[in-house]
Length: 356
Image (cartoon, rainbow, N blue to C red):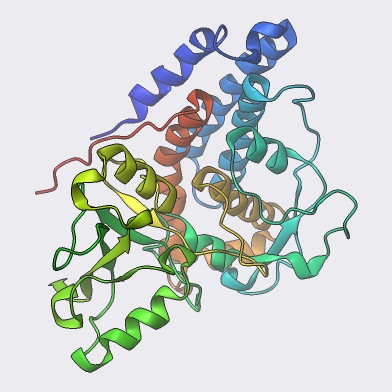
C-alpha cells in the first residue's frame, strides 16, 4: 500500500482549500510564499527519491524547511518568515549517537515548532541566561525517542526508546476498586526472568515520566506476556482521577488521557510513549520537529563532512549504514504525512495495511 500519491494530491489541494481557513487570506505575500514553498517541498521530495543516501538528507532537509515556511505562512500571526536554521551542531566528529546539538537563536526550527505546537529542545524565559553548549541534546536521544525510527537502533546508542502502547477502549477495576485506564506496552527484547520482572518494571519505567503513577496490572506473572522471541507485552494501569467508578468514566475521558500520555502516530491505535530528552529531561519535540533535527544533522554531515558521511553509509564497514539508509527511505513516506497534519492542524491516521 503506497499512500504517497494520495498525500501528494492532498498537499496540492491545500494551496486553495486552506486559504479561507488560515492566515493565508490576510495577504498575497503569504499566499505566494505558501504556494511556492509547497511546490519546492514537492520537488525536493521527488528529487530525494532519485538520489542515493549520499545526497538524500540535503533534499529532505531543505524540502522540509520549505514545508515549514508554508506552515508558518498559514498559521503564524505577525512575523512568519525566518532566515536562519535555529540549530547548531557542536561537533561532527563523534559517533552518530554522541553528536550533540542545541538551539541557536530564533530560526526556522523555533518558528515551525511554535506554529505546530511542538515542544522545543530548550526554552529560556525572557531575561534569563542565554543558551550554552551545556544545553545540547544528543542525536542518539532524539533518534531513540522518534516513533518509527526507534526500532532501528544505532550502534552504541544507549538512550531509552519510544515504547509502543496499545490502549484499551474501556476502563477496568481490580476487585471492585477504583477505575483504571488500561494499556499494554510493547517491549522488543527478551522478557526478564520471573524473579526480575518487578525490578525490571521499576527501572525501565523510571525513564518515562508518564509512567510515574502506573502499576503492573495484576501480579508480575500475569502482567507479562511473551508474544515472540525477543518481544513481550506488559499490562499496566493508571488510576482514574478522583477514584471514579468504572461506569462513570466516559469514552472521551479515556481518549483524552491517552491522547496526552501517548498520542497516536500515523496509524490508528498505534500510540508511542516517548522518553524525555536533553539535560533538563524535557519532553521531546513532536515527531515532525524531531525528524527536522535528525535531517538537519544529516544534511550538515553530508555537506561539510562528506568523507565521514560516506563512511557512515558504507554497508561493508559501518554497523549504522543499513539503519541510516533505511530511515532515510522511511522519511520519503513520513514527511508528507506529517507536513499535511501540520498544515491541517489535526491528526491524519491511516489504517495499517494487512501483512501476510
